Length: 212
Image (cartoon, rainbow, N blue to C red; front, side):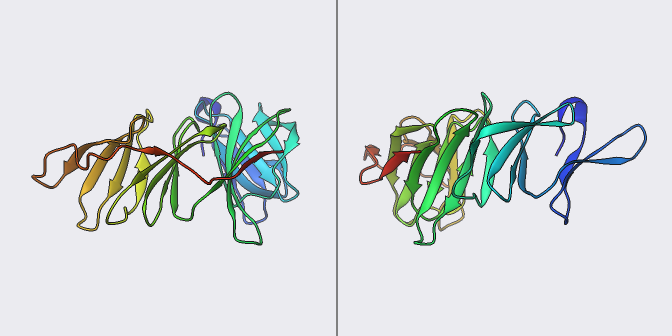
């Protein structure tokens, strides 16, 4: 990872977050017991410790958050406005998308199984499920949408500006969808005209949400 002024940060096998001084070549330990670390879109490092506590790094100093990551996430992404998006699983097998911000209630949404892709600014999450594409706004439980696809989509990605969603079909062709309307825009590697199915995306139903 590279922070402000292209300063490198990185985790170690000893669960430390370290930074490298490019002038002297020496490393410096920023924090310990770190299980996850990531960079925000503006280059700010964030970390989550083994006990669920969260910190933001500013000038090699960790600024503690009052908000904790509970349950402990398996992956994190940093978004805009000092917000972290996290993925967590429970012992019951449920998978939760979490939106965390210092001093604010955690927004949690249960999401289906499948590969997940998070937009660069943390405002869009897309899950490639066995029946289609599920799209979520991590900070808004009312913003879920679903586009049914047959056959099931493959790997999924969100464009840097978060305007497009990319996925691959069973024939290995790249499909491009509009993020807002979930209509197919283009299919690469095929002579099939864009537009695809005429079915419209629906609001996701039956997805329990909670705020903690």
